[in-house]
Image 1 (cartoon, helix red, strand yellow):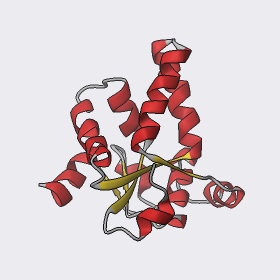
Image 2 (cartoon, helix red, strand yellow):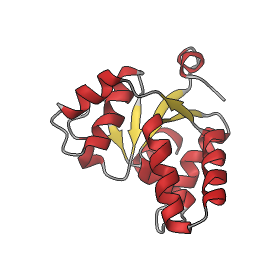
Image 3 (tube, rainbow, N blue to C red):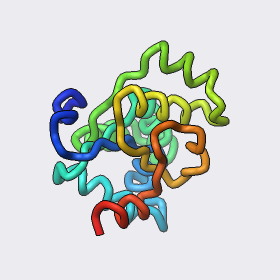
Image 4 (tube, rainbow, N blue to C red):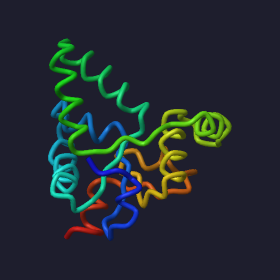
Length: 150
């Protein structure tokens, strides 16, 4: 698994994925599955470095398990995702900064804070408006693919 320290020295772009992108692929949420899969395929081929926050790992497990109602299968899905993405730590300072930010959604503020602290290039999300106050630009999977891989 690629660590952020190693990836900083590569000419590969670093992105953090919003939970909705991971869940779109894992839960086959149409019409979003294909684009989410394309982004994660870039990670699999090491054309981009994909990250999630540590707090997102629990969210992904919880939502996946709530949907499929199978703890073992939910763990396997998370293990599969962790083969494609690296996990960024969430510090106490990230929590304090996020809770005091102008971003309306706390979980999104955590993602934005982690992205900024780790020098991430983009937040890939379907809900770019939720990241309007982020210092790291938010981009949809479609716009990301078109801008960098068309």
